[in-house]
Length: 623
Image (cartoon, rainbow, N blue to C red; front, side, top):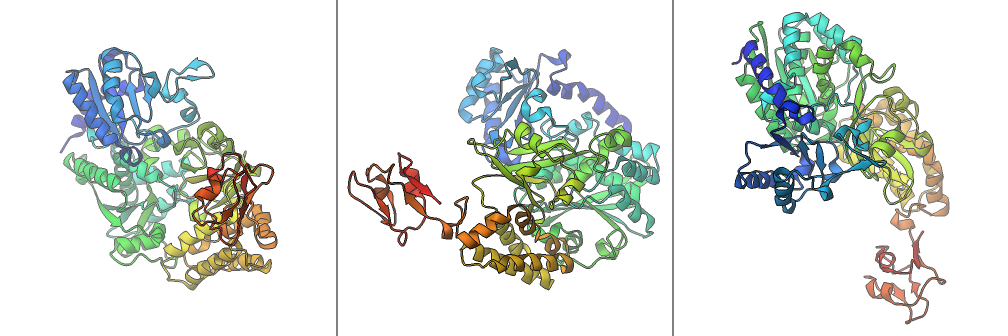
């Protein structure tokens, strides 16, 4: 167990050591820090072996004192992993391979020369990049929840302490009352980052007002939206910030026990959480009589099996209790009767990650970021048809165009932005006509979408919006717990109609059926899964109704995605009769003599697209 004085000593000894990683510590220029991403994305691209190779080469060259290798969490620019940043120079190396390691050690570490071929970006508009923050991907970001990701070793509690870790907990235990903590969070305007946007301080106030012999603080780290990995990245890169925030929440509402509910599919996050909890207990930051202030609080982990419905708070609580994860009617709300029938607060990982900075910097600081009704920043997982797939954190109110074009690098292959899906299966599509909309809770709801947990899937003109709606309905059909009829049966009926449309056998009346069914599901489903499952259908109908009608009336998918409506055609004016298409067709559907125009037998064609990809003269089109 460490005393407060000992924790302060750790901070004093390590704060300069950590500051090397900003490139601003001139007193420590005799040592380099090599930060290598150890998040899931880069780990899948061999970053662990790269770290081993680095340490091996450093040992061979006997420069262990001059070069320190640190495994961090996600830097955000996942599309270019594995990523390595060398400080104090701030060199950002991307797509590093094992073969690059000897050159990096020899050229950069021993000779002081940058390996330019590995640089993510050397100049912007002709100006040499002097810091990571000046690159287009990072320039418009403001990292609050992700402040320590890619900066510290997530498996070392001392490094967390060196970046003001656990100072917020010390502050609330030594300088404030529970009511003052709740007021601070309320005045900051923090809203839940899990999707609903419920005021965090008000939720804590409700739980604090209910008297009980036991209360609980729960963390939702289940994160089931397709394409979402915000919470996972925070836990992989900065697990102690969640532990600290949960302890602060426990102090605020009078709870002594916390649970983190995380899906088993996140092995790296689970491992680092376990390490962090053990370290915090060893230091006396979790457990009995924390900082000798009479406050008791401890945290355990509960693994989920990956059921999307367990992202709903009552289903999650039921699962922690050891039962099948099914939602319950509300009221009573968890703040009144939650885990094991006791008052409980439940927030997601990103929400908790904002708590320590709010405590340390004040409510006015946090509320100065963002918009009038949506304070602070939001983390988004960028995916789909975008150049820079990855994780970004921007102030609320940043426009969709800024996120996609300036931070995300735009749509690849010269194609145009068509829409963006936010909120996953519970959200909706934002069309190009709203490309300049400021992203916040209220604006998204107004146009038929929602913030959700932060998944942002970008689509270009090659995307069929009917097919997108069908994709999300397939997901919710699989993930429905089956407890209530509107969700269990309604999602299946919606999917059946969408299948009819994409197969070209629907009638125009089916669109009216879709809309009616969506309306009834939203009004009668038991939980948020069923109530929001129609959103992808409703938003695509609202903005892309012409595509639905074209599928039905013209039997045509303009994006060429729906195979049942697809035909490959040979343009007579371009066909050279080279026979390459016929020779590669797996179904033998193409006929024609050498140097004569070829023909595709539509009855035999399996619509695989091989002929189109093989043709050297662009003579085959799909439509």
